[in-house]
Length: 478
Ligand SMILES: [Fe+2]
Ligand SMILES: [Fe+2]
Image (cartoon, rainbow, N blue to C red; front, side, top):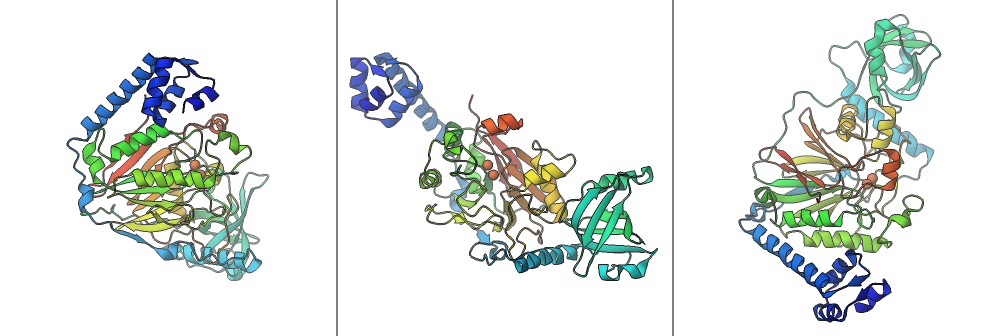
């Protein structure tokens, strides 16, 4: 122990050395190193020990009056296996896989584009029979460009053929031109317009959307769910002290004890660890350079939670599963603690509330392509997932594996959409769905400084499922 200090060039007075030997406590050693003094005296050791005693007192005092309601309830978690790729990946990345993938996407989303009262729907193979008439087409956008005159020219296709669509930029159509700016490549939309060979001149566009008349679902039980994401264990930016405060809070040490006692579930939306070789020179930013050791840190976290708490996890782009989405669940070889491990994305029904959990790797390409989208409001981009009924509309914007089924289609509107990836908390409600981006426990990285991105670490959203109330707990220190 003493040797460790000597190796760091830290000297000790004899009486300090005596106490350290007696205590034989790694944490004491860490606290002394943190003082960053070249010479440690007895009074340094005494003050560190006194401070630790004081912290302990706070913890002990803090737990009185803690009533863990969640302890009295059985857990209620159902994984919707049809929405999870785990164990079901069949693709070989061949042409027919791509064809099935896009047909599946088109067929499933276009079902939501049957607009009541709208003009009759025309297949693209028949489009030339409707010259000078108004038609409606349900199509996938295969290319998008601006013409010299500033009009928007789309190439679109359905299962029967392809055609071109023009959105005019002239001032009579300002509202429509604005709407058309939100069109993304590869998404499935409904367009109405007049057929004027060789184009359709569009006069409206609709997205599949989720239904309007929905109320947010609640539960009978007075329990709560804590939402976490992007813990990035192993990173040198991981906020250990703040994370420890979160764990302490879960044990009823701190403010809002009543809420802490209701937390039955912790759901983590990916990037559990920082991973290895995720980006060039990442090793310089790691304090733990072994992937198993990084996941061991996550296991230790699960073990440190009160034993009545259930943990649900999905992977993100930093986790050790395949890089392309949909991602299978993180295996038992990496996480051995008792968790519900699901794929990314996944649907998990918790206490009757349908949770769509998605790491949200596609947020980057959505922000790059949608007007008015930004990293400071991830919840606004999450609304666009629901409006488009797709979690990653732009094919190739991030790595997507063409499975025969498109796991990113949102068939079934969720009660909660939980995402991460951008390290920025954001919440909203949209048509009866609660949208949560649960932020991070990683401090601002150098890369984020260069990007000008300001993350919001150590803020944990907690939802009370009976009242529907969402609160954000702040574990930032200082
Ligand atoms: Fe992350
Ligand atoms: Fe991520």
